[in-house]
Length: 400
Image 1: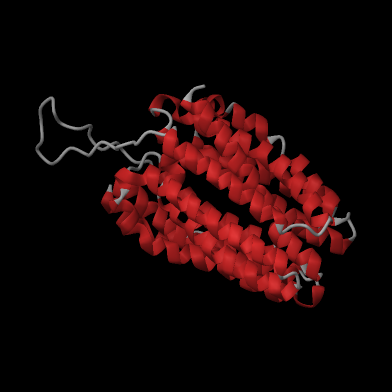
Image 2: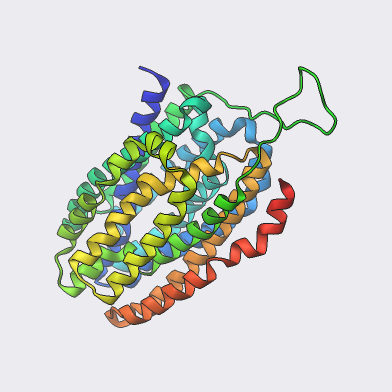
């Protein structure tokens, strides 16, 4: 069995656990308490933790050569925290007790699993298993398997939530982290990025020159990633709870519908290397961002199961096409440049998500769904999305 196949199998299992967790925990809290604000809080505190993680960029950059083993150790640390939280949550079952335990857990989870890896590992982990020639193909295949993992994980989570057993999702997720960490340790290989040529260096021993960076496309990554998270934190993250409140369908059926409608992203991910060869990544990071915002506004103007399905469909395409396109564009950067760019993206992601969650807590107060005000907030984030690039473009261009 090739190292690529081992990586894909382990990453599928890990993603399966991730989707169980991110579906069952916030929706379990919200459904059990009857309060959407509980679900919002499950996304609010991770934004704070992710922002804090961005200040460890220098430490991550200094340990570039040990990235593989560092990432594995982080996953094992998350697994231990998750197991302890699950045991405590199973014992303390009151909604407020569950909320407090969940807040403590998601802060640690977001810091270790979502914050630190976004600085480097989420781009470089593919290099532990393949070379440059197979990089795009592996990214596409993983994105496709992520959609399958999302379907199976969300179907499983829907049953956990409906039965009131969402706490066991933490134990399942912890197990998948252990598996993925072991694969990184024993099947992966360290990758060392070539150093750029020093000024005036010549001869056969010179390292490859620094390639030209497509900052026009990376600009859309810096614009899009924070905006995606802000929009999701306003309403798509809570679709099962919103659909229940509006009478579209019950929470279990809603989670199943979301999982199924995301499936078209599978084909796009499987054939991503062919798709990206004909239509470059720079097109997808723009087109899918604009399309996602458009269908989001459509849902808010005409809330229904049909318009909700369109938002979910494009969310699946974002996983299948936008995410690998994002990774391919960031792969132009190496070493300190990659960590520096990822740090900027991560901080703005956290700021936008935190602001959107604060607004969502107010918007859903009293159990209300206010599509008009949500649309106004979303429009505000769209206008603000250009701010990160405008503030950082001079320094980014100067580094290249």
